[in-house]
Length: 536
Image (cartoon, rainbow, N blue to C red; front, side):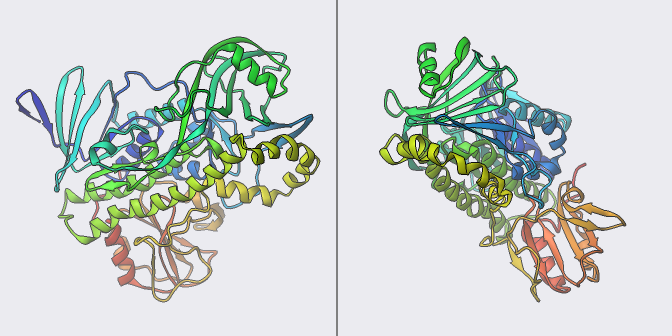
């Protein structure tokens, strides 16, 4: 650490993470566990409250599992949620647990406040010796060819950092994105969300979640309030036109107006205490790119969605897990050998190619869903207020078709996301038939490794690359020399093929018989062949 005219230039950091929400904390954990030295800064003095996100999807729990945090998360979550859907005078009960998802360890939606997710992730990071530096603001950042330069301001003064990478997890008004000169595609919504924590009379305090569909939009009540029993979330036409601080709680909503929302929804309950409220302007936007040189974007800094289908927190965490291992491999490898080669650029560019395409598809999904649940034009209004109540008697039968519901959850939770067109998805020679294709998510399954059957995802719940050998496959000699690779032989899988699984749970390489050159090339491509051992 060297002083320069009142500033300090720090070089003992590989990745500066800007923003300590769920995206930034997840990225810091993933990069740290794959060999990087991390620093996390957050401009807010205290964690952001109240929580806006309330749902964790199955795929999000899967990608967090190797970081050792899922047990703590599930302890705080409602993993057997029940919602009562009010369609006019009809009420339909919907259970969102024990879904027909046999290929995941988490066949349910989990109701959980964002504040609880952040608490678990921050504690895990602190256990690794990394603390969030609060009240520390990024003033400027730039790509300087062979490194990134960032200027920070805190109560201790101004500091300049030179490090390999800066990642902006700093929300819709991202400073990193502005400094990188990366623009947006998108537009604001004419509708907004109203949030409030309140105590209600005329409803049981331990009641399940309630959903009301009406001509003016949807109204949700979750028993997850932070300052009162209930969290209210309602969609409505914006009272003052499109806002500016998209996704951020704005002006308060008067109690009388909230009571009117409840009355219009047909709910016979009265507000006994209003703890807080806010209107939240919304936009659907996508950054034109997720990387410029050594500056990266993740989460809300890279994409903004409506709250429909609960994508925001989940998409950000999945961005973070995708990017974190790649930066970790490059950063830790650079301390042992040069990384100024084509392979490094291919690996770093793959983040934009993989996650921006996935974000674009989610944008279409959430935009369509939000139109159906919030638009006040005549078609969606008629669907909510007239068609849905008439169809209510058929809904239990539809929900009883567990596979149909499961397919919807697969789509919403990103279990169907694949990276088949990624340069990191490589088919060996000869190809392996009957296994997930390169780029696909590896499904969970019962496998036999040392005796009784075990669940595959449980065996892979640690950082690094996992090489799965079929029963009669030859062990590639280079695999034993790659310190970031764990080798498992699946005794209940006949054949001579192998599958290499990336740290984020996607298949990276497969072949139907020994292909040492192909495997070695793929390990070099992702930076696993020459990296130091994974930290415990």
